[in-house]
Length: 273
Image (cartoon, rainbow, N blue to C red; front, side, top):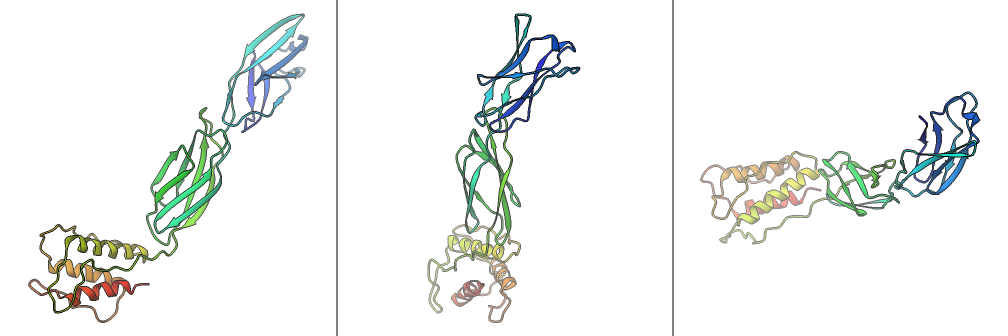
């Protein structure tokens, strides 16, 4: 049974031919194919069961069109429907990547005919889609090379070619740390749980920045006991990044942690370049 074979479909054009003709198709007066209300004549190839190709242009990206063919034979007209013509959407363009520490913002021009834009980021667990033209993700490491890969998808489920852009998180150094409540040697001081949690979090930011593994510091709550192990873990985590003299001694159970001990750890951390 004759049918329309749709070939070489892209964003704005396609080709089509009639397949499945009988071998006496040359007895027909003429054939035509119609797509998007444009009709093109095609001609049977002697000894074959198909016609010549018809080219259709000026189609819209990401659009579905119907197709049908018409045959005339001794004054009679025969019409039959063909497969739907589904054009691909255009690929995204003008990709721009903005890097602020580990915060990544990707902007782009959405491809014509696209319903959504698919995205994949290399070297991080980030995959998804957006309906607009902005993507926000968080990178996993400082000083790391990444790539964002984009692809348009139309409502007809056709997808564009992929486009990509490379970028790096660079060498954005974390900000220096300072205590919310000053620690003055010789005076009573308060070490709030939120301060200590902030300090250990900043230590891990520096460790990521310097490509060290992060340390699992215990999260402390107001009223918890400040232990020697907590102090020593923070000291060791900083010393590994900045081995030098002048660190406070390792503390044992019952040892006093002075203001100078805490301030020295902060200074050692902030000296990391």
